[in-house]
Image (cartoon, rainbow, N blue to C red; front, side, top):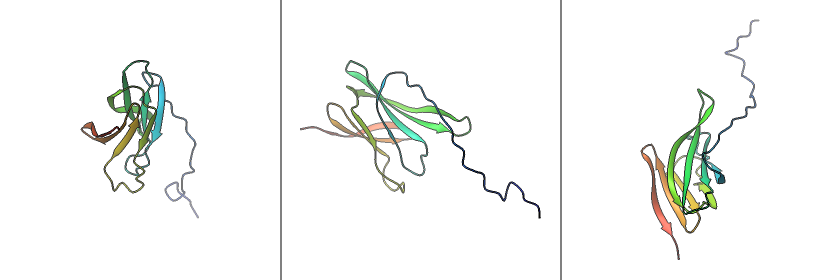
Length: 119
């Protein structure tokens, strides 16, 4: 009886990936959407008003993380969190906090501010 590699499931392999942000990272969060695998939001810590949020994702062909979107954020982001959407049924939202709570919508054309919550 002959066994081919097509019939044998490949064992899972552990891999280590590396990404160097262009600034000091203060906040980060993994997306759990099934259609956006290996996507990470990173918030900068720059000691001035102008900071950044960057969305990176794994290019599985090259096995490297690539920046997909970068947008301005006032003050450092103290928290970054994706919408907890395990089915991919809701809009692709990202919340950040710093001076205020902001909700952003991300898409192929970029990222835009949806809501600013302050008192």
